[in-house]
Image (cartoon, helix red, strand yellow):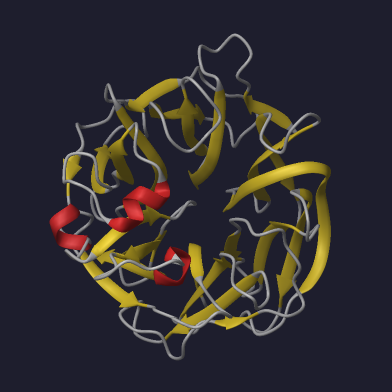
Length: 347
């Protein structure tokens, strides 16, 4: 286990929201650098550390996206197979805005907006952000969040980014959570232009798909796994898509065999077709970060390995070139996000 981001002496108050991709010996570990506090609001930057040796050592921190008075967050990286570029999708909003106000809809300057950046040199340098909000966020959506985790490049070359949103209420409502839903966005030209794929909406009390992760199965279907945010059903929900993310085969359904405290998770498809899922499993607090395995394309899950027994939060999984799996995750002794760590394990 290696501590990759530690706020002590860094100039940042807190690091959160890990996201990781790898290609060959290159590993790119992104997160949010929260400048003045640990909360989701405030001035936040997208930061990165690169490894050129499969995650054994790490180059110094670099800032990928930062704007005065803005929250820059939810980094979702993936690779364009044609150009070889790293593509990074992120969101921004005014630093003073909080999720519930954004869910009600705010002015365009402070509201949640979506951006793309590119790197043609393995993450060493980055283009300025290019806004794609009008392509991927309908006018009646308020809250918007990419990932948080990595995106995927399908065997067809399509780029897919899992995401979630909220509908702006047409009249005052008491329970804004009920207006949340999952979706994905995709690009068929290497991340230049984007479209909205499936849009999930469950207005009942049981399922409220929120922070989302995705994997491509050996048969070409996509498997989406999401946090059930304050729903009365199981803590995690899932769905499948047979048309590369444009629609879901059926609405999200609960996963009864997985307990979790209400938190983001990550999935990855192994070369042999098995799926891995990472999530804390303590139902009442963010502890016991655990890997689950599925041998039937996500239909059922079994616990396989405890990564961190103590306090742990968000995580992201990545396949490494030596055949092992990496996990980039929040953990600590004093809080579930005291530091961001990287660990590997053999299959």
